Image 1 (cartoon, rainbow, N blue to C red):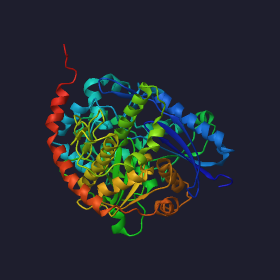
Image 2: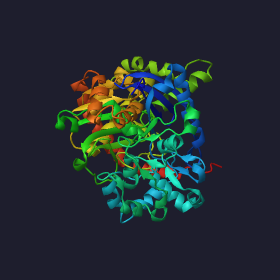
Image 3: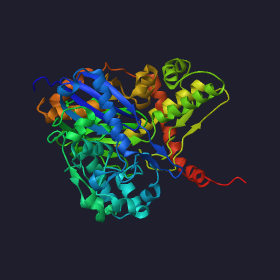
Image 4: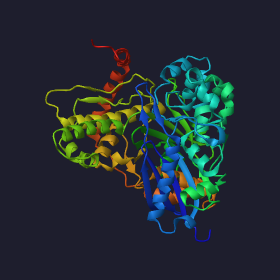
Length: 527
């Protein structure tokens, strides 16, 4: 490979676009990032400029070149992953049809309720392994079909965020097996499925669905226009990664081979803005629950998939409380920032103890999607007393995040994970890890890799260019050595949370009528 020793991974998330350089053994050499922006509307919309997303990606790559000497000739391959779900419409000359509808868009809530009544609903779920919710492209397209046909009439292809970036890099309209199969296909054969498209009422829009490309086997060359924009060399192989959730899981250790039974019962939770909880299982071992919730997302490993539940809001709940604190500090002339408050977490938590206070972490405007789907779901504290202080609320919020994770794992299997791998900024806190470990009832390990999502995509590129014969051998070098020592939860704390969890489940099953009534009060004139 001459002097080319860098794989460049792009990870375009909801808040940040990152360009990360790795050597061929998986060591991170550098990272550059650019903040994303999106707009929220009172109608539940969440829109992101497609052009700006591409320009932000270009800027991230350019910034990385400022930090890594002689970057362009050293890049042997480029891989891209990005935020999942959402709808990125492309029209003539590969230009955007308006702004992208991202996964936070809540307008399709009523459409989801209608589609769930379809006689084909169970068949759709059986094929995709994935519950329908407002985040997904299928639900959003069905909503557009009913309310914004002009958008679809102007479109020639429908993509996800990473597909849009791949199009700008290579000129190829394509998507990957992971998003294709959980949205419109079948996780067993990793292709589109007629009954799924019919269940969504989108038969006449099938022409919008792009070609499915397996990134570990097929790459496309960086086209000259993209090379000029990014400063990289034209012709550099570009790999289309899978969706960011599964790329982060791959990079963080959701699948590490070895003993089959242990690997099957090893789990991975990504504690980010949203909570992603997954197991790696053989496609024949997938458990499809009666509630028709969760995701089944393929891994870039033959016959291997992640069974997954995602709750809408994980650290969004923590951000809500910290941001409220920050605004109060600033209102009275104080100075602080979000990072400073996060660094103070362990000190606050040291002054708390397990209590009867409970928090349901459904803070997202879009409600909840895992392990149940309810667009009206709202967050709440239960058990507040006059003696509770700020640190108690903070602990309850973190416990609520842990309870939601446990709720998700129960929906996938009756068996508690034998080991849980954690990823995400919040788990840098030792106290947060202790609480999450005890809430779920499993020992935890943390991947010390900073950018697991970009690493997962880069691993696919490493296999595609022949640096590794298969993904298992790449995992042995890139992932397993970076897992920390096992941290075992306190038995007394586990027992406490075992009791609290049953109450958590009981109350959340009783709350939907309350959420619905609260939703009916929205916008009522108080005159």
